[in-house]
Image (cartoon, rainbow, N blue to C red; front, side, top):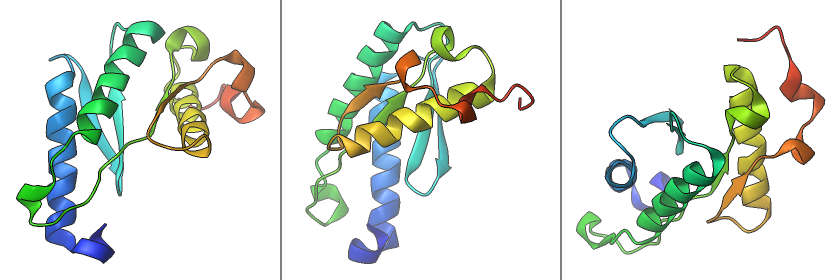
Amino acid sequence: MNDTYGHIVGNWALKTVVDAVQEVCRTLDVVGRLGGEEFGILLPGCGAVKAESITEKCRQAIASIDTAPSGESFRITASFGLADTKVCDYKFYNLYASADQALYRSKEEGRNRVFVFDDSHKTNTIMRENLV
C-alpha cells in the first residue's frame, strides 16, 4: 500500500484497521502489530467458536472501511488464522505457529476469510516442546 498510495495513506489504513478491530473486540482482548501489515489478536477466555465469531466480525468490519477520508479510494480486506489452546496447548510457540499455519491456509484459499487451525493441520514444527 505504501508503494501505491504513500506512507501517509498506509499509516491511515493501519490505524483505521486497528480502530475497526478494537470496536469489535472486548475490552480484555489484546490487539498488537506483529510487523508490516500483520497483526495478532489475543482473545482470552474464548473457545474456538466464540473466537471465530469475533474474528469474522473483525474481518467484516475491516472490509466495510470507507477509505474516502484517506483521500484515496481502495479496498481493505483481511485474512485471519485462528488457533485455540484446546488444540494447541497453552504454549505460546504452539499457538503462534498454529495461527500462522491457519493464516497461510486462509490466504491460499482466496484471502479475506477466517481459517481455524485444527488437529488435522498439525506439522512437526508446531510441537517443539523446548520453545516458550
